[in-house]
Structure formats: structure tokens, C-alpha cells
Image (cartoon, rainbow, N blue to C red; front, side, top):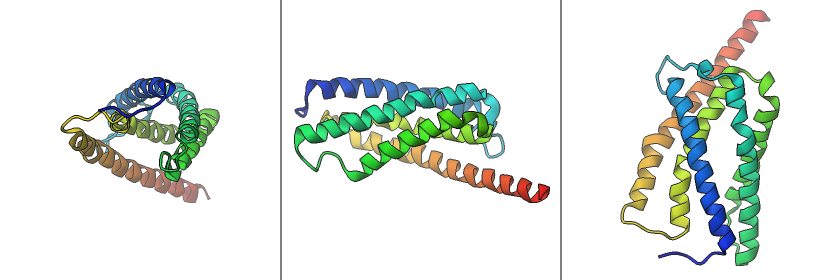
Amino acid sequence: MMGHFPKRFYIWCLIRTIFQVAISFYALDFVINSNFFHPSGYQSDAWNKEHLRVMYLPQAVFELLDLLMELWMLRKENSKAHLPWDSIIHHGVSGMYALYIYVYADSLSHEFLGLAVAALSCQVIGPLYTIYRMKFRFKYLGLVILAVQLLYRCPLALVSCLRYVLFYIYCYMIFLYFD
């Protein structure tokens, strides 16, 4: 069963899915090369800074285009149910964050940029949400979404939070040492 959406929206969903798969697999490559999930083995310099930085200009453009397409669909459908406010806020904040990282990458530490790129790999779930939204259904879609959420995105979020805390503790300790 497929919902009724304008052709432009279907084309955008195809482009969005291709982008999300590409960016998430590219970021997953960094996660693997940097030993992101290894307790003591995170190597943020597995990629050079320019490789980390270059991922964020297309991400910023993607977020802006996705926001514009979602707002267009909101107007097209004439419904407040289509686009929740958390999605509007997510696209706006994510787009600004991506642009910030792209513009200021030279002044950001390698560790910070690595953490930011690892977070992009969570977009691996995006195509599954798109399939759900387009009302394509297969028997285990909900289970697959839940599995990706619990087996990859939740551990990624936990490890990312721990790495950010350790990063800032380390920065604070260096600040105290040189003070």
C-alpha cells in the first residue's frame, strides 16, 4: 500500500534516501577506522581534518533542502499533522550545526570533528523511516526499525555521550594544568 503524495515529493524521498545511505555508510567507515566503539581505542585522526570537514557542507545543504521540502508538503497537504515541530527544529538545528562545523573546522579539534562525523552514521535509519512514511509496508518493518534503533543508534548515542564527556573533562584538565 502506498500513500498519495506529489511526484516531486517521491523524487525528493528517493534523493534523500540515496543521500542518507551514502553519508551514513561514509560515516560508518570512519566509525570502523577510528575504533569508535573500542573502549580505549578511539583514534580521531583515522581521517584527516579535511575529510571530516567535507562531510558537513552536503549535510547542511541536505538539512536545508529537507526542511524546505517538508514545509512545502505541509502547505500542499494543508494539514498540521504532516510535520511536527520537532522535525522543523531538528532540520533547523542540524543544518546550522553542520554549517558551523564546515565553516569553523580549522579551529575545532580533531577529536570534536571525529565525534561529529560518527554521529552522522545514525542516518542509517532514515531510509526505513521513509519507507514507513511512504506507506510501503512489509511484515517486519517495525522490527527492523526497532533493531536498528536498539542495536546501533542507542549504543552510538551512549558511546558518543561518553566520548563527549571524556573530551570535555580532558579539555578542562588541560585548562587547569596551564592555568
